[in-house]
Length: 381
Image 1 (tube, rainbow, N blue to C red):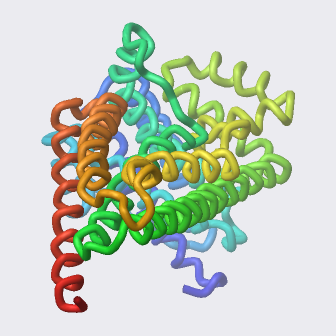
Image 2: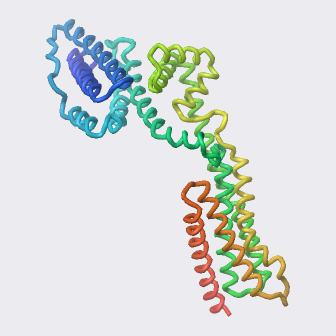
Image 3: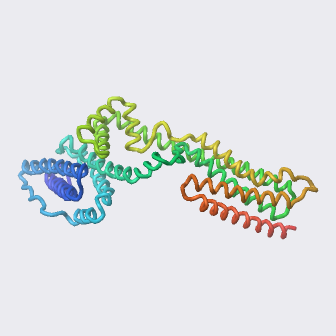
């Protein structure tokens, strides 16, 4: 509708009244800070509605009576909230408010605070969702901090890369060496194939991990830079976001305002706090691609070397072919059990289960490649 047509105020009025009615109905389904937040949102919507009713009166247009009941879509949301709890509809509420964030940006008759109010509404629901996620994760964190000495946070990704690098190197190079052994060439050829597989796999693993972590780091830095830009250009809105975050954590309105003001007094602290609380990022620990790449290279090489070692000591035309093969199979089986147990210990899935899974996949890959090598070797021979 054209910006010079006062009938557009009817749409604004209806939207604000419907939102107020929904938020007051939802407030009856919760208690505490969430109820207070929803009622505050409803009060803001009422003030917006009063503004549009006054604008209609200025143009001689009668404002319709306030709705006596929710529209069908809002009624369905309320039913879901009553059945599943408000957490089940927070994402929908956030998306709805996010879609309406810019509704007043180009409206000359809107109050200066209206656009900010609409953005804060979306942020309120976003923080409610974040607060719920923290509540869900809190018991796990409490267990880890309170009594599990094994729990460690690997922020750089190097531990993950090392553990799974060993696993990949062990399985892939065992399968490669078994394939050549199945074709029954001499030990020197098997040794060369194993070393080539070790180096190729290690470099590939290192390159892949470097690109992955570096790309992730670049993405995180970009998000932090965008947050820094918003902090410079819209400090009042960012301070309001901090207040909403701390209100979602359980602080009172006054305490939240005081804490947010204190944090905003130092731009560096404000950026680090917003990055942690709003983005879930630690600016000081975004991952080290070089460290992860080196860990991956070394780990893959260690895993891949297990099956190669026996062939280092049995080379030459008269060397036995069965002894290094038996040693390679034995060392690989033992290593698969050990690596699988370590993975199970770190992941919490269970050492026995992870060891059996690692052994099954490793043996399966080795048997298949050995069989293929045997078939090819016989046909070539």
